[in-house]
Length: 88
Image (cartoon, rainbow, N blue to C red):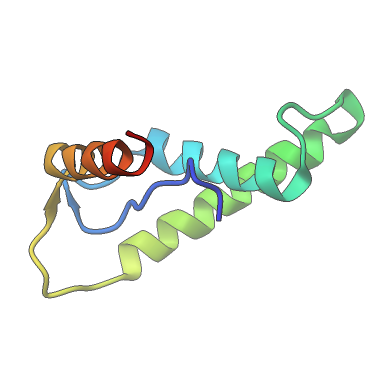
């Protein structure tokens, strides 16, 4: 799994379109091996990002949970602490 793709479900406030797009872009970059595609591949790359974004949006709106929504700042602090413990 690409480390830059973050969990987007069950946060308050919900994931933004920019967050969904950034996640889709990272996913397509990982699959294709391109950070920036050539002109010959740009249309296919952009189409894939749009399709993955749409699929992610549909997924996020269709998921349900009974768990309370997570706070982004609290989760970010937890991630920083895990990183500190792991890397010193």
